[in-house]
Length: 299
Ligand code: AHM
Ligand code: MG
Image (tube, rainbow, N blue to C red):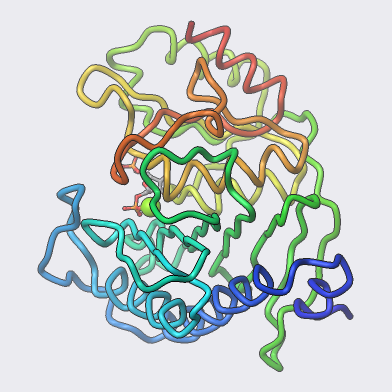
């Protein structure tokens, strides 16, 4: 039974980065607890993307913000639920996060998650996923788990009854296999190429595993070790819906660390500079051959 702190020590993770990661993991614990009984209604406000904020989005954001504010190593944060990046102090680390991805799935009791990217930076503008030091994706489902990379492969931890995160899967690898999570199927009305791609997965007898939450949809690729998640754009929204900084970047670092790939259809997600904190990107992420198939089919 290896606890998270012991894992960090065992791999020789730098002390400061470890401290930032511990703040993040403490916030995951708190969200996991609060989510069970909290109000699932609307907060009455819109985020920078013009989307209705739920009370759940606001409180998850607050929990993470508070944990990071209490850590002097964190100098800047940016959240999907906040209009701008926020300067906290002189700390060298920057943490960007989607506090509760898929929050509208909580009332129907499907899994949701939090996504974190950790950098050494004074601003998120102009950075690339390639600059990221670590990424964490937490899943609140029947169990609370997270997958993490500090650029030494991908590991999964599970929250125990005692309140500790325990190593549950080591050196996660994503190879090939017939499982698909096709997002934004509305694009099929406007894009024959995407329609054809989805039909080809069906004809090849792929297993459909799509929950409507990017976090569980991608997490299953890590845990099953195979599959593809797609979220293309189309005329109405050429870059799709998902955010480069908050969602696609950290997920892509984890995927590449697991031996998979992540592309916007042409370029690696991790090679794309963040032009503005609200920038969106199409994404095709999972097994290498599947990502290539997306690139070839949608060229
Ligand atoms: P959110 O950050 O507001 O929760 O939105 C992101 C979520 C993703 O988890 C999911 O892949 C996507 O929205 C699905 O959106 P849609 O059902 O509108 O295609
Ligand atoms: Mg989100």
